[in-house]
Image (tube, rainbow, N blue to C red; front, top):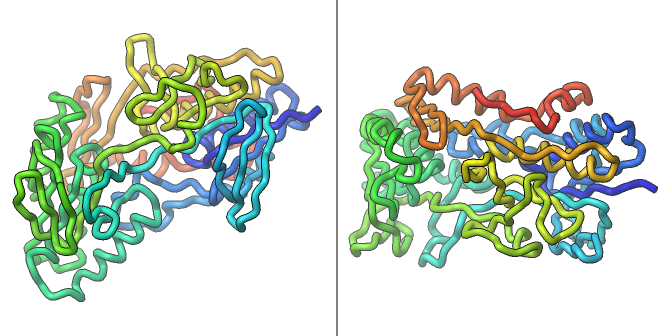
Amino acid sequence: MKHSIVIAGSGFAGMWAALAAARAAHVAGKSDDISITVVSPVAELHMRPRLYEAALEGMAPELGPLFTAVGVRHVAGKIEAIHAADRHVAVVRNDGARENLSYDRFILATGSQVVSPPVPGLAEYSFNVDQLHEAQKLERHLRDLPNRPESEARNTVVIVGGGFTGIETATEMPERLRAILGQDAKVRVVVVDHAPAVGFELGPVPRPVIEEALRECGVESVASSGVTAIEAGGVVIADGSRIPAATVIWTAGMRANPLAAQIGEGHDRFGRLPVDPYLRAPGVPAVYVTGDVARAATDDLGNVAAMSCQHALSLGRVAGYNAVAELVGLPLHPYSQPKYVTCLDLGAWGALYTEGWDRQVRLTREEGKALKVAINTQWIYPPAPNREAAFEYAKPDHVIVP
């Protein structure tokens, strides 16, 4: 009897889960006995870590030929319900048709999304760089700014959130604005964050470097504060003052895809489901959870995978391999990713590369930028659409780090 693997999502974790599952079936000599189906709206890998950039071409490499090469089927649609007790999922296809897909093993890899709190005006007047269509919407808006009367608001961008995405968006923005409004334009970029400092969550070691880059790029910050309302021409912050701005970009926080709430218990504050070392959902037979929806230990020291592509790549490979291994009798592979690095783009200043959970600074400025460009343009992209290339990188212990 043919076994069925169903994977929800074709992001970094979902794509690599599919490739790793196909490789595991091949290694076991069971490719004809395992069907692998990926359910996602489009067979594309959106380069979400790069959506703060101005040039958005090439941000959605096609996965169809790659899936075909390794024998993976793609269903264009979304899973709206997980029926773990009956081992099937309810799918709504892009054309509106509904169907149930049965599975022997299910892998939840639907990722995360930007938090949208009930801030007045957030939906009407803000932008984000969370998804490709949102980044494209922002780019169209910025390109239209020269058609507006010159004003302080027109030339000002407020970025809400001083985390990783907020910093990368902010440090790129001054040059991006000048390229659109003119090199002599008086532009203003302001980051507003609840934390005591921009980049506070990254720890004290890299903070002086980040602050130096912000200063050199001309980015202002309003710390220990928040945005209480967004209006057509600006934002109101917690002390009641107003910053005129025609462009407000929301980057404040991420949360796991809501499908994670349908299985298991003990979800963390990000909505992630705790998993065992093999990425199985405890108490939910036949279900694996990976990528941004999984709260997974990276080592024995208490560190937990971040909601980032760095961890999603390995989490996906391990989940895909184990889902098949459990069915065909291969030994299971525990997830482990003890080496942690960060590479933060800092616009015209360069980039910052750190190692370890305490983020010791290793590379800065031009050297850091060269590494960041390699990561963004080479390392995170899918392999060539042939089976040999895909399987070479789909091993469960394959980790890409500097």
